[in-house]
Image 1: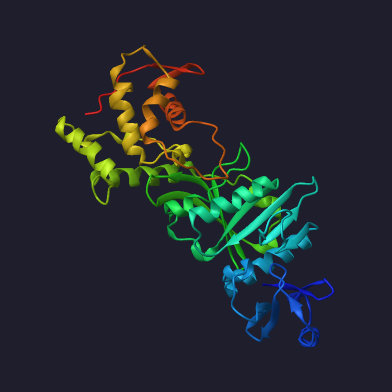
Image 2: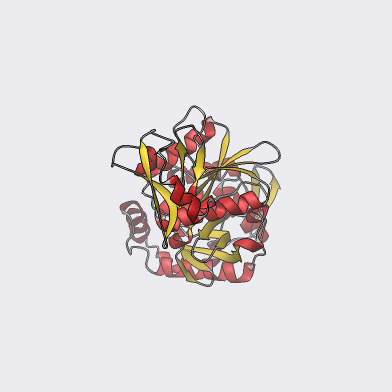
Amino acid sequence: MLQAQLEDGRLILLAAHRKEQIHDFKKQRFLCPACRKSVIIRAGKKLIPHFAHEQIHDCELNRTGESLYHMRGKLQLFRWLTKQGYTVKLEHCLKDSARRPDLLLRTAGGKELAIEYQCAAISDEELLRRNETYERNGVIPIWILGGNRLNRTSAYMLDLPKREQRFLMQYKQNMPLQMLYYCSDSKTFCNVQHILLTGKKQTVGQFFFRPLPNLLFPHLFQVLPQNVGETHKMWQSIQARAVARPLTYAPASIKRWVMRLYEAGLLLQDIPLSVLQPVETQYQMSVPPYIWQTDLWLEQLDQISVMEGVSLNRLKYACRKWEAATIPFAVPISTHPAESYMQRLCQLGWFEQINADTFVKKKALSLF
């Protein structure tokens, strides 16, 4: 832990003091803010000055197992925000809760933000518990992943497993999906925006690397420029490879669906890629786009005649079997994937939206 209490109740942040002062502090007794047990000072040439429990026991601050990378980043973010004039508390205990976010920030408008700098894996259950605690206390959680968790595979691609997709954010309606990463070694933020999920861990996005001193906190939530051509081309390339090898490492539900197509004399590889369209709301679906979009065409869109209409509610109902059980906590459900998909087809001229619930087919498209 970065700070502890003296017996008189004063909270001491060791890293804010000179070496001589830290040496004098070693003569005094410090207590853990969470469990009130004795802690000792750890400081050295290669260490960030911090406190540690004298004995191993069950304490919230003891269970976190902070790494040097995490501790250093938390301190850097604390100083960065404080320098901008924000009221920031480090490892502060929330009222009526034992939860201690890395940083608790109060905005000028009175909102409280819990900033969690997450450098290690965390279970779904623990993530849910933390977010529920923040919600009960009227606190908005902001999750910043450690740069050590960013797995960039090309100029416009990263590997984003399901457990990482839980940290997708969209705090404003006009914002694209984004992920925030911070590297405490290089003191650099990476803001990944314009994210297009593919249904697997391969994810398309744009990377914006910016040094910490060049940023203000609101800059993290600004829309950054998008290279639509490159991102969509990369997304289509991934879909083409997925369709060519649909049964590779596929779960049983997808294998059964593909086999039903084969039994009906249909080859998934023959699907025109033009019917597979990227939709930002893919996070609401449990299967890749080539599954639910092809299924939507075969079961619904291919069945209606030109100039015939289809209701959005009917399409949403048809997609129910493919919907995910959970979605990222920081992404509001505003648009259903079926609606996003139909709007893309309208842009391509295959359908026309005549009201909020009805789309009319403008031209035929043979899938096979």
